[in-house]
Amino acid sequence: MIVRMSWPNPQSLKLLDRLLSALPSYLQDAAQLRHEIHRYPDLSDSEISTAERILEYLPEDDPIALLDTGFAVRVGPGFGPTVALRAELDALPIQEETGAPWASLKPGVMHACGHDVHLAALWALIRAAHDVDDLPIPMLGLFQPAEEVQPSGAERIIQAGVLAEHEIAAIIAAHVQPRLALGQVSTGAGAVNAATEEFEITVNGAPGHGAYPHVAIDPIPVLAAIVQGLQEIVSRDLNPMHPAVITVGELHAGTAPNIISASGYMRGILRTLNPSDRNLIVERVRALVTHVAASRGASAEVRWLDDDPVLVNNDELAASADGLFDSIGVTPIDPAFRSMGADDFSHYLSLAPGLMMFVGSGTGMVSYTRGEIALHHPKFLPSDSLIGEVAKALAVGYVSGAHLAGAV
Image (cartoon, rainbow, N blue to C red; front, side, top):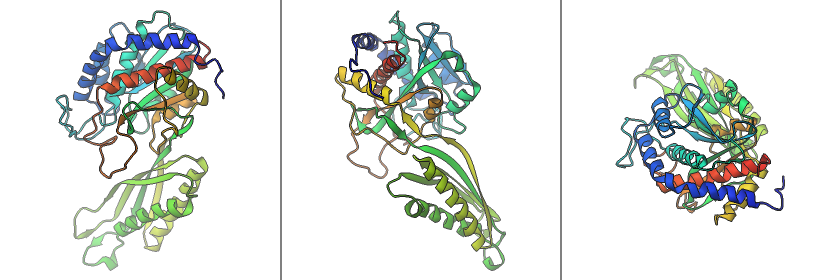
């Protein structure tokens, strides 16, 4: 869809300027809030203290419950189409190694994906929105739990129907991205993140003594052969021009070095951009697992678990955001950043057009070094300066959503 030739119009530029002018006075408190959230992180579906901490910084807002641990706040008119902005409450089961003075005090739990930055940025923008007393369209801030698990928080929020009464016209998110340099931003119409589907493969053999393998059926070589075969599906059964990734992240079997176990299992995740590729891979995985196990005298089964759909940015929202970024001296990168990462934000697109933006927190995409500090790394620690950059992106997204709804 082509954006109106007059875009960005004076009304949209004035709205964006008022939001951005109000932001700086809240960034110092936003950084303090970020540090508190980072110091006391909560895992998925346990984000009660994180939510309470944020609400302490939003004294004038009446929270709307999202599942058991999340909440939303609404600013502006109490009726009509609404632009929703999403940030994530949950941390990851990772032991922090940043050495920051405000590092996590919870062993084995850390904000290693930038969610603390997103939360502080959304808080700052909501406070700035309160300073704009005539918002043309409501802003709904979603402080969402359980982004990092399945079934995801976004999926469960949609199923619960709690957003139905808010008449969502557009939904916006922004994510820090270390593969982009500081100061860079990416919008990008079309698919920007992959669909994912988790799987579990169980192999059943026959237990025995390690000295007598011929009277047992060892599931471990079967599991190893399946792991190798899974990679061949992508490299030999799929069109090489179609991106897809199969990752086995867990492998479990055995209890002692001299015992052949009765069974073992693996868990992994499939990532695709094309539904037909997903269907082909699922078929090939089932055939591989069945035949590899049978050829070794074992049996096996595959279970496909919860999934996230492809994250597809709306064309008009992306184009509107590009025009607004240009107006404030920020040129979105071209080509846009796209990856086989996934985000449950994609579920919201079943409700309304959406836009996921990526905000640079690193040095750019010059090198891909094994072991580099990136998302989900125990040393990942974006600068506090990213709070303002993410808030700015969310403000651009809000005005773009208002434009899509015809409010500016």
